[in-house]
Length: 94
Image (tube, rainbow, N blue to C red; front, side, top):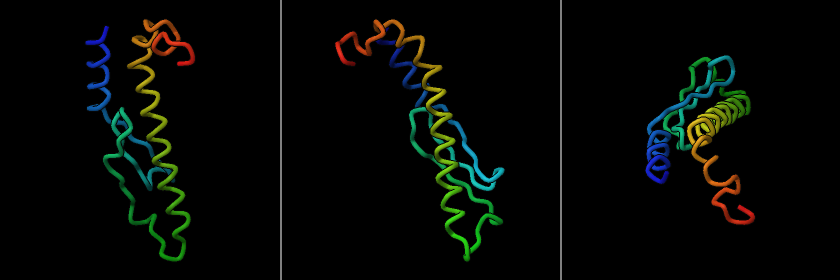
């Protein structure tokens, strides 16, 4: 079981997901373990008179990538976590 957990964690660390915002104007790439690896901003998204919108798009893209990473982690680790007794590590409160 422990080997399966380690293999799943390694799979998550190497997998990548992408989140987008503004119809693809901003995209964020993240590993399945939650590390942000890239951020892409289309030139048309840059308006020096409206930086707040660009900032909001960046935050939204990162959140979208994080959601996708969390879904990937749940799908990858979920079957393994089921063998832990439903209480995290089988300890009260976890």
